Amino acid sequence: MKQVLFLAIILLPLLILPSEESKNVNGLTIDLIHRDSPLSPFHTNKNAVFPNNGDYLMKVFVGNPPVELHAIADTRSDLISVQYSEAASQCRYSLSSSRGKSITKGDLASDTIRFGSKDGPLITTPKTTLGCGNVNTENFKNTGKGVVGLGGGPLSLVSQLSHKYGHIFSYCLVPHNVNSTSKLKIGRESTISPFLDVTTTPLVSASKYTAILDGVSVGSSKLTPPTSISIEIDSGSRLTYLSNPLYDMVQISVADAVDFEAIENPPQPYRLCFALASTDFVPSITFHLSKGDIHYPKRNILVKVGDNICLSIVPAKGTSILGNLAQENLKVEYDLQKKTVSFAPTDCTKE
Image (tube, rainbow, N blue to C red):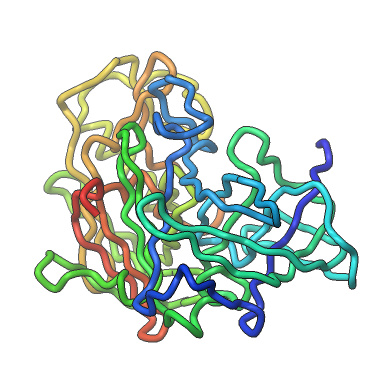
């Protein structure tokens, strides 16, 4: 794979100096744009779901004069890294993201990063430490120019800003084909209203945002694996991945509910596809977490893939993952001090 020059941005707490234009101590709001949204620079007008193109992008400005870049907002990454051309060498570093895909080695430098919402002030963090290195295992050519890690590790954006805004953040993801921005909120502004229908469940791992999944209901049938499984909540994965035997149980139940012959040899990673443009026979799907339920958006259960529609839940090769198709029009709040994650059905276009 062609090598890509990267800057791994390490927002060291002692070096983050918010500018005069960012005095809101309650938090900050940052726009997120789905890769396939009409607002995205990568929009292709193709009404299909590609498993590796489901990113929500954050606009960041690096350097003086600022260079505008689009980076993936990713809760499974603990590192901020953006593609860049050059930086001053100062010392050596070696870092990798929690996804295991990105590894960067090189020199540290210092620069300025700005981010924010089009409706609010840009947040400026001068004297930000930057790492300039070669990345061989991740290709952002068609999806953005880097990653903004939102994980629980010490180098993520959330952790680096926690001394000012606290250890809490949320996002509300609009459907990918809507002409509107999603919102990432950090600090007290992110708190879910108590008047909403909120499900709160413990995080068994606050660094990787892992909850316990007791089972899944397809229609009126509750499917329970022999033991509960761990599932990571991930803003950067498009599809939802379930480990077996739970995945097989879900696939069989959905196939029975659709009551139409599935195609042979579906495109990877999908396992259940139908030669249909659409169908009204889509069962409801509910994920039963240890302390509450998440209702999978019905419009996203079967998604368009070429000339077919396919189940957007696929078998996991490792960890089970709740992808962002399952999180559209949910306000998702992470409280890293309480070690909880909360979900509330919301019209995210109104956030």
